[in-house]
Length: 410
Image (cartoon, rainbow, N blue to C red):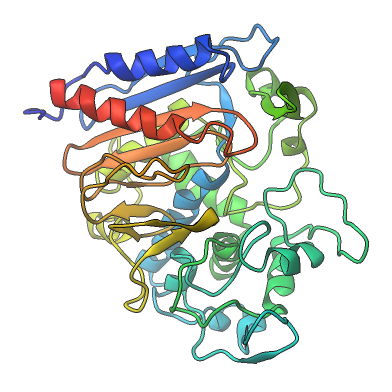
């Protein structure tokens, strides 16, 4: 155990894991960032921003963080809760009237529905318990038919499908017109809930969602390279997204001609890009309970609420895609929180895995993750890029397990 949280620490086994992944050609490059409260952030980077590229990875390299966006959106909502603009158990229909009369599917036919038992609340959006689905998961075919496919790059609508929405308002109206998979507050379904939450923030705050994030979070925290859009001057620092097809590497998203130069809308569930330097500042702020470098963005009690288990009482477990249940895991403001010590199961969603109770955070589909440990006042950030998401499913669990072995030796 660490006796003093405000010290720099070495993670030799964790660094060796990253180097091995790069040397084996599993990823072209990646970076680790970690720190304890009161000590400088430490970095260990290796490799390049893409196979065949010479640009070295460093703390200002830009990565697609996909669902690692969700904790940022969750914290933005907590800011409005702290301000008294919205409330945790407030029906979202008071902000977005289109969601006033939701219906629930009674079986597999979306035409056979009944009225929802209760309204959708802010809590339900934060914890994926609103009854929504998403492409590739619950209600996936229905959502795809209606063009609701966040995270899909350069989507071309198929026969009988609607095009992708081009604003949060249009996205919200599409989702509100579709039935729910379950009554709000009764089941965890990984979903578009955080994208809808972005719309709630936009309407409730009276400013575009991306502007709210910039003014209330990114500027105060000095997160200079985090956003929904890659500007031309950032392209040289932007990592490729390699994709493996038939045992060979191709590009799912080319940094030189990226979808992120022209996103459909600011997706609060998975649309941000960021750097190790930026996200480390966000993680440190959460560990210091809302303050960074003398700038306070949240009250300590709000941060503690955000990283607590906010699941409705009826929801006792978290189910993730392909049938894996995360035992001993709850959900806070767009991020998981371990309620008991994690145990490795060997599954691709082995999250958080080998960590003590209280650890919170969430990963991203293209190889990124951040774990924050309030007891040790320690965070570990891991950024790499690969596609599809299940290609290197054991990588993040191996990184976090190595980090805790390093911590136990420190």
